[in-house]
Image (cartoon, rainbow, N blue to C red; front, side):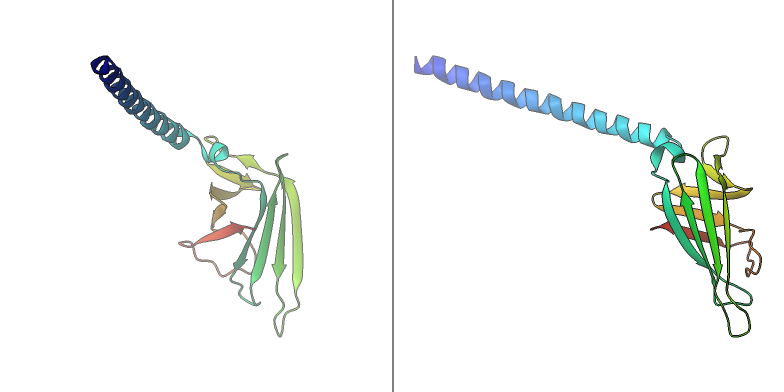
Length: 146
């Protein structure tokens, strides 16, 4: 009788171990599959891009240009450019509203022919077309999500 109970306990332990090992392999496969799927997605699908972003750009004749950009779910945007006052130059605020679009492969957001690449809570802006900015064609400006 004791021998039979011992065999049953051993069988149960071995079965449980085998079951756990097989489940762990499935979890690893599922994790690798989900990582591959995520990497294959476009930035439009990966990131929550809607919201408010901000950056301060260098200015030729003012203390800096504060740029605030709002991207909305309906595809509209509002961009506010605040040219900070200087001793000799009064401040100025310019606002633009419109509809943004995505590039063909959904990798760039395009506002009025200005391109922004997107990653997690960040928009990267190369060569902004803003008057009074100190231009540097090698520099990329980063708008951070607020």
